[in-house]
Image (tube, rainbow, N blue to C red; front, side, top):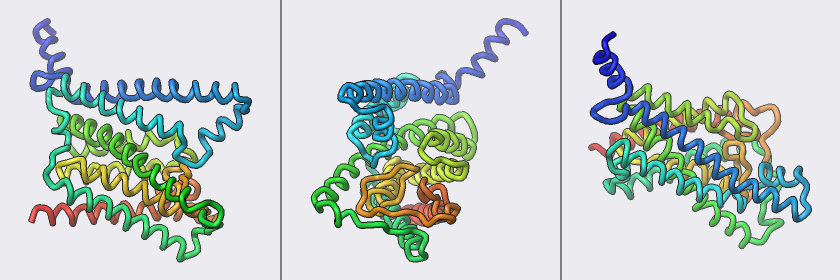
Length: 313
């Protein structure tokens, strides 16, 4: 192959429309995001760990507090704020200098903002209420006690208030990264369906280290990524998937007291899934590892489809 021919091949592989090829942009973005996020987590967790050691806590107790205690903890709140700011910053820089497009064009237009947010929140509420009452009514959930029997009402309400911005930050963070940037760029370089599948598999892989994660859990999380991507692409904005993602997590954990992707939240009820029915309830991971979560995601897909058609008529 001649030098000019080799150069043309390199340009075809690495560039498109005068910019770095979108698939390479997505790869570099993901690597940068992972690296910076790890640095932030180490920078927060290690000082906290050694601070607790100095105060006399044992490594086991510190680990249990970090990984096994009810969320959100102070450390988790600090992390989620820093990770959100980092994700927004990285996305802005990549969007501005590599994509050569505006951050707003990822899906932050004002059109249908209020109605999409309202529908997304309502959809998560209805689905989580359905899971809770279906499992409780069929005896698959055991309510051990209510928090208001052992804690002041002010503490319970305070936990809800803290959880509200926490899960808003989680939803904005993950939707900007996995739907806003990854789906947008992958869809420029490959078939849109394949782009959604790839971004959703990456989204599922990021939950592999969650407590009590299983193959079913990761598959369902990836399916959730597909549903969020459908909300994004069908609405043309990120407001709908952000609102639905937030609502799904918030009502699942802090309101209806179910584990959120393996994480136990500060919630009004102490409940346990009935042993032997993990395939339905998801067990300690929560509905996302069970049939109940799968059915809810299928219903979410159908609901989003109806909403999309209603918006265009």
